[in-house]
Length: 340
Ligand code: SF4
Image 1 (cartoon, rainbow, N blue to C red):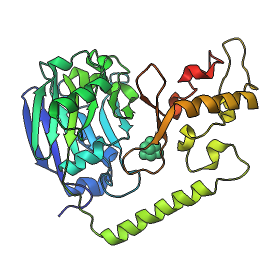
Image 2: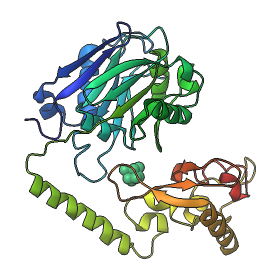
Image 3: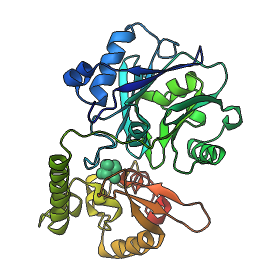
C-alpha cells in the first residue's frame, strides 16, 4: 500500500489520443519528495534540453504535492512544470484551490501531457474513467467561463477544472492556467497548454488517500490548526497589521492600508506620495470594502481565508486576493473604489 501518494500517474499523448495509467516508482518520491521535485526529475529524464517549448516532445506536467489530499493543513498546491516559452528553460508555476486534492482522490499523483491534439480538446478524469473530449465549442471562451461550461456539460458541479482562456489558446507568452480562485501564472505555461490543443482538465475523485499513522498525523495537523488560532487571537503588538498575523493572508480582512500605500510607489510618474493614507481615507475605504466584500474564502483545507468574493452592483461576483487589491490602482488613481 502506498501512503500519501497514490502511486499512479496518468500519461496522456494528445498526438496519438492515448491514455495510460502508469504505476510509479516509490523511489522517485523517496529521493525527490514533493510534486515539484518529482516533476523536475521527470522533465530532466524525458525532455532533452534542446527541446523547444512548443515541440510535441515538451511535457506539460500537472503534479500534486506529497501531502496534498491528506488532512495536512493548506496542502493543496497544483504544480505545473514544463519548458517555458519565455526562457526556453525548465519552469514551474503553482496554484492553490481544489484541483490537486481532487486529482489525488481520483487516484493519481500527476497528469503528464505530451504531443499535440489537432483539434481543441479537454480531459475529463472521473475516478477510473478518463476521456479526451472535444472542446471546439469552448474555443475563444475565457478560462473562468470555460470552467462553468464544462461543469454544466458534465452535469458534475463537484468537478474541479483547470483551464486556459484566449491568451493560452493563442500562445501568448504570459498566458496563465486558471482554476477557481487560483491561477498558475508564471512563465507562460498556459501558452504550452494552448499549443498542445488542451483547453482544460476537469477532475472528480471519490477515493481515499492512505495515511500510514493516521492518529499521529491528525494530532500533528490539529497542533497546526491550534497554532493558527492562537496567532489569530494574539497578533504581534506594535507592528503594521499586515505583519502582525501569520503570513500575510489576512489582507482581504484588513482595512488599514497604510503599509500598502506608504511602502509601495503611490502617485503617478511625476509625483510620489508617501503620505497618502489618513483616517478619512481609511473610513471611506472601510465603507467601500465592507459593502462589496460578500465573504472570505479559502483553498482546500486551509483556515487562512486569504481571498474574498466581491459583489459590486452591476457586475458579476468575482474573487479577489491581496495582489489585486489596490496594487494596480496605486500608480494612477486616488479613487480607491476603482480597485473594486
Ligand atoms: S487560502 Fe491563502 S493561505 Fe490558504 S492555501 Fe490558499 S492561498 Fe494559501
